[in-house]
Length: 375
Image (cartoon, rainbow, N blue to C red; front, side):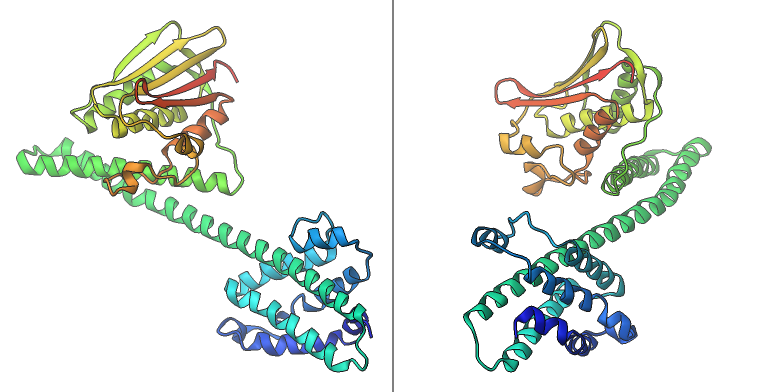
């Protein structure tokens, strides 16, 4: 009997063995009934059997063995993906889920071989086709499982970031109240100032984390455009940077009309991250230049600093989330989550602008942002 025929004829027996094996995967299986344990096993097997009866050329077989073939079995992929999602939801880990497919493969081959009376060369082809089908189902299950893991992680980070904002706001308001109501001096004033500065850093980090999670959950960065002056925003950000880093002294150059229709809060984020990045990685905190230049339909912003150049490999991924600089990898202290430039890119995209970076030993590092005046 051909393997596809054997699977269809004995599918319930095979699924019974699947269930017995799934019962041993504890503690997740302890709270699952028979239907949950059997899950999509029958659908996967029947879809695999159908796939095995479809004609396949040697070239298609070789491509499929490498995971490169365009041929897909929709019912098999759907059953595999649904199985991966459900196993994640009931608490199976990835190793436990993949072990089910290993057992299923071994069970089918064992039962089928035991039923054979006079093996035929065609049976070896059946085994190859069955293995291909199971591998396809496993790949879809694994992909769906991984997607659920990523989504669960992002939801956790979103909840964590949201819940952290309330205590941070309480700390910030308390320090503001102390500074207004109490005449603090010496060490007491220094301590409150440190708390205030640390709270600001943590607030920025939480905000960046939430923006990352929002993008991973498939939501674009929300903006509320309004008329504003980029020069005023830059002055405010530089003043704040100098308050937090007294040794810094960025230079601001304004050329022409730099007014436009942008989201003031997002533009402040963009400026804070670019200027903060230049101050952190520049060789001289007093040698950072911010230039605003008005063009007919856009405003060009550049932030320049001298220091160790960014390698070409690093430039290729510099706007990716959670990317750490060389200094951070070497253990240099940082208050960054590696999200600052990722947020900058998101803000630029939301405003339909462009951003470029150039860096070399002679000219230093320069970030150039061009934003249209109107969206």
